[in-house]
Image 1 (tube, rainbow, N blue to C red):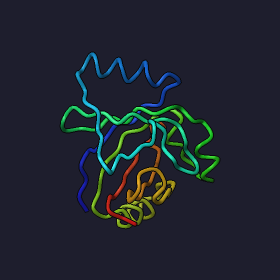
Image 2: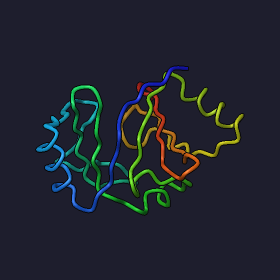
Image 3: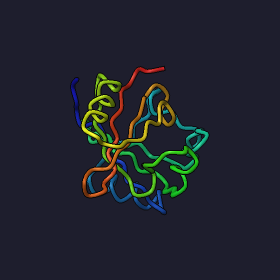
Image 4: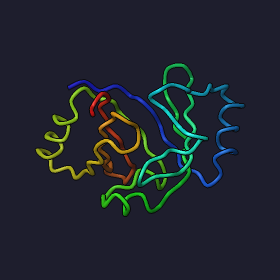
Length: 140
């Protein structure tokens, strides 16, 4: 299985302030494509309805999102990716990644396709408690 760093997510209580800071200081552009569809800046998901701004430096994506400490509870998952943020690796074999975690005794939360249509997302903690996302696109 292959991995590539895909995005970093930061959660905030003031989305416009955080977005403007990064756009101004680092000249990040906005991502507006089918994969990152939003309606009026608010995701239309069942469990997470916070606003998300998708930015890029041309290579890496930055997902700035409204903090939601309840997402993990609403999804009945152990790991909450929307409390403090996370970083993400994209893979071509999400099922193989989950098998590897199982073999290594690493606990994870399988969110399936819930936030971005077609992205099968798995979240886990590193040894220091940081949240990591691993996802595979093109899964429906």
